[in-house]
Length: 466
Image (cartoon, rainbow, N blue to C red; front, side, top):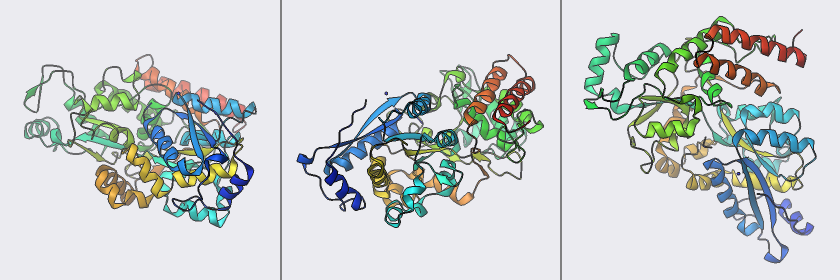
């Protein structure tokens, strides 16, 4: 994902009644006369490219309906806090809000969001939404205690992106075989990924594929900025090593310093040696721009982050040279382990346009509406099967088609964010510890021991453990 006004007008009650009596669908909703005025639905979210595209598509669809969407873009992390504070203060400004999957437990527990299930109880609404078309592996993370809390828009499964041209280069293949004793290929284990990252890390002036380097070159590029970016990359490796996501969900006991967790943290600290300079200050966007500049052999990131840059000839030097693969495995019982990542459009709990907001969201995020969003943002990874496999999308976004079908058909071992309202706090504790270990301030084991004590205190205060 890439990483900021509001206004609201009321429409005549009779016009609202007409709109809400009929399902919103292209060509199925009566036109609203200009004399009736315009209803403005407000959106609180981050200034990511995909949400700019959503607003454009929504306003294109809403033109003939007397509906306008006005966004208020904030920095990513500020959206969560503002939504919580505004709801608690009784602020009724918002109709829609961006929802990231790790926020769902906290937002739903605070009643900031209206559950989508409540609207789907109406058969007419269910037909418009067509929830059976959603890809469960990508939408489950937007659920909490049996309720769906956001209309799914963008799936963000994490993939390994690797430079096919370098992996197939005969000079590099021969050198790798001689050094490591096995063929250079897409890493199937994290041990292999470490070897490849080490092998391709080189200094300016050294040779790569028979040519001297103009800049330092890195074995793997990862965005490790604090505020969730580091944790979302680290957690992929954490679960691959057989560890829990911070705690055991059956006993509620934190397991931050379990042997598997320490092994994962130690691995990540070692892998850090082969990452780009300044990784601790970079999110996904800058990291992928570096990959697009031809500065790395591999990257792990959400698929949409990679597709927003790497296939774009206006910003990428590696167009057609990057292939997307499932993440490596470590624990053989967890093939291609990954933590599901995704986001959607939530309906704010204090909206004054409750039913209209839902019906309009259903239209904009319908298969046809999703295709319109992809017109403005081709890197969107849709959460609907019908869109992934649509012939137009297959032609327009072949990487989306290939990668998502690989993800769906291979059925990787997938973990979902735990249903815990304190999840963000717990995540921040572990991320801070990882930052300290990567900076060399503590060993991985000492950092995880300290984080374990803090998460235990958090869980005790919440009443989960004694």
